[in-house]
Image (cartoon, rainbow, N blue to C red; front, side, top):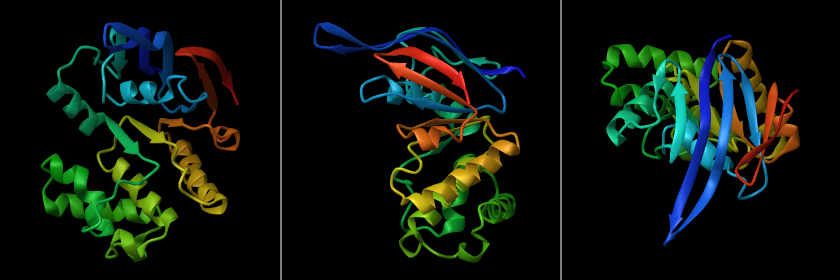
Length: 227
């Protein structure tokens, strides 16, 4: 398997007045295509910073980040936005659905922003709704859905542009244990289909679903183990 993600001596330093506060300190990391990786660590360990860098929401202070065949370390904001739209699918703890839109319309949002015609995006979105077992709910709005169903919509939306990588930020954090287990089973199925998934979590039972767990501490990789 080729490296989809390559971090080479990546640092992220935030300026607090005249002082620089390091959030990531010399990270070296490869993630291969098709891997399912959990990023763990206590509060302040660098998990969120790592996710923001991997998702091209931020750029390293120094070091190199390659996503696929593209060095994204020094891209400007417009270029990073394009990479996010084409190569990364985000799944958030709070779902981030648009309340005025139906399930089908929410799934279509990334395709709409890429200029995909309705006659193409409509069947694509219906197929994704079927994939996440929501074919019977496509005309419902988020307020009419359970938490688990809203997360399924968010997963389908993240898949809309067929991204290189799915990034999930505490994807079961707002769900009860039974519903969370259903979402993790869906992630297992996506991984079995060859999807690359990187998930931030603080829960051991969630990380156990991943094939690899990376533990961060004080901005450094403390451990990197295969499950």
